[in-house]
Length: 379
Image (cartoon, rainbow, N blue to C red):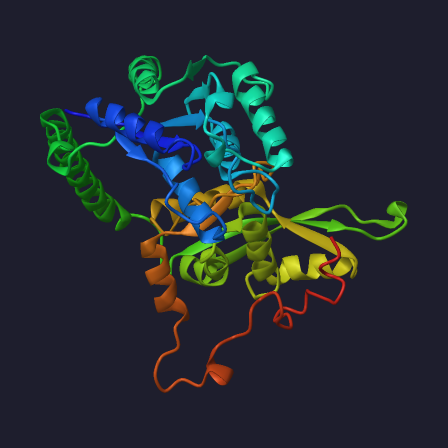
């Protein structure tokens, strides 16, 4: 596959017109693509954006300094030096040439401004002596033909030592090897999709045997007395709460639409069980004896049972959103199946008045078992 490398040519124009023509001819003979912006007026800020884009798209940066500093930008540097600084910043391979005898250049094409002459000498020193901290081989020239010959040799070495990405013809970009790789990948995708369909089919068959929907599930809560002083506290107790899988999923499901932490979901479920008629009358009486200042939590074993079952039913899955590296919490979200199923549980049917038919969230409702008080959430 034939690759052509793009070379950005940076220099002033008036004093190096013949040299630029010689460089362009040498680059074309090497099958390189010359690029440069000497034909643009250097005061247009939009043109600087175009220059940066051309440098970014080029594989190599070629700078030639003659006997003229050039037009000065608002930053008080010439466009040639500004382009040179940007090439350094982006890490482009730099090929540099300076005129061996700038005093021999006709006065009519040199800078008459002493300040510009001073800046020109400083730029020559930067490039030639590596005073910018980057050592490189710098060629010298006196004539356009000499420069062209040296550019040809320098570019051949640069392409060999620092091979660039280059450009290719559109009809050559797709090689036989690439075509074969794409075919292999398509076949692999087809095989994976087939395996996925088979796994989903098996999962659907297995799900029918799992507890779900209106099936009941009994979970354990830990109730602790927080009365102060500690000597006045009663012993903690364990109580059981019974609900259905649909009722459970109906309340914790909305949290996972946009993903939520396991700890938050677990607490949400605990609050729901505690503030509904899921707890037996005997356990309600035991909790009342502990007073108002109590805290509760769902046992880890009960939560593990719930989370594993919902995963087996393909309703929830681990969170996939990117988060800060210091965030080590586990997140859960709804699968596509889980989102659809939640909608069937929570969506309002026609003819139903939401204010009359839909119960409030268990975190906000008045307890139906008279267990919860205003202090219940002080954990």
